Image (cartoon, rainbow, N blue to C red; front, top):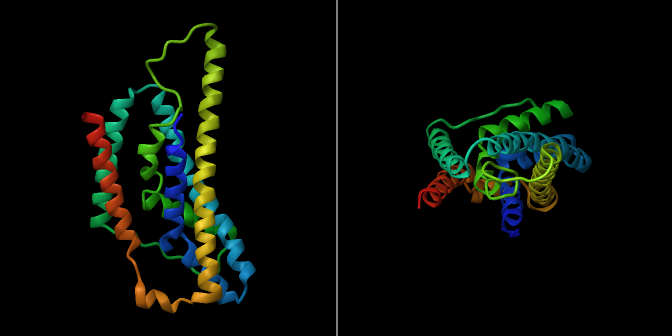
Length: 218
């Protein structure tokens, strides 16, 4: 199988990690408030876990649907969802507010909600649909039980690997930028050179949907 889906998963994970709305800005704020680099590094873990749960939910849904729905139908449906969700995010921006006295569970839940609200998992749909995670229309020979077990094992293994690769890249990127801002750059640079990654992400969602729809109906 081509390696591009794995590269794309890692690239999207890194892009998520660079987005301050996905958690690194929160980590820096906690570290500065508590005057502790350890607090900053600790906060990255539950944030990455919450992000992974949101991604895993989408991977699970895609894996189940591919066992019953034709791939082209899934691609068209995924494209429509991406475009519609991107348009919705453009009209109604999500803003999550959490107090700074937070536990690991609070951070995990916050991260899960933020990743879900931003459509982080939805952005992976074009990649997930190209990965070997089972599907309809395959002719199998031999014992049905053995085939089903093999297919389930392959699907589960691919799904788990997809979540781990994406989350590892997200954690590495967010951790690197959080430490850099905390140790050397400082938050003042945000006032001088802020990039609206949230708006960029919205256009990326819509763009991915348009590309996926074009490929599906071409």
